[in-house]
Length: 214
Image (tube, rainbow, N blue to C red; front, side, top):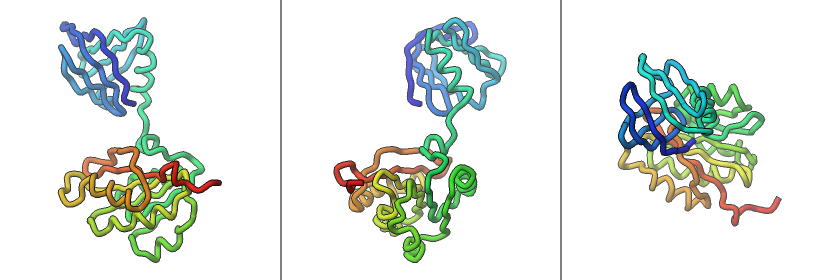
């Protein structure tokens, strides 16, 4: 979501000015009050007369947001799913290669006609080379696996995307390493997403200037 607002906040009996940041799964307060409030930890969410009231553990948290209160309340009650954040839509043509997160795979299967491959073998890529897919998810666990980005680039539609999922905190497999290989494959990164506690993902697309005319 990435929305923010400066407002007066009341937590219990304490009032103060804060900068409120509305993220995809939590509300962050900075300023006179400092807090990270996970949506999952809330007991209730209300918006009345410009006041956003959150109840957590019996303690009310009130933000004076004015007209934005209703909109923020709706987004807190209905946060986007992981697939929403990844831009996966019904009817898209999607392939997944080497994914170990079975929850993510199950979610993809439920939303789209997923084609899944267990390995990064070249034979698997032969099946989807030139397939004009809307999206390809590929998991990279070792730096040597990065070479498959060039293959993935050949599998997507001119407006498609490649999501590269890789472990967090690996010195031998940093975001900058993935970005560099993506660039060599003729792609550009334009979004990052948290997949789980252990994995993150970078989205790559074909630059508009390099897309073939339809």
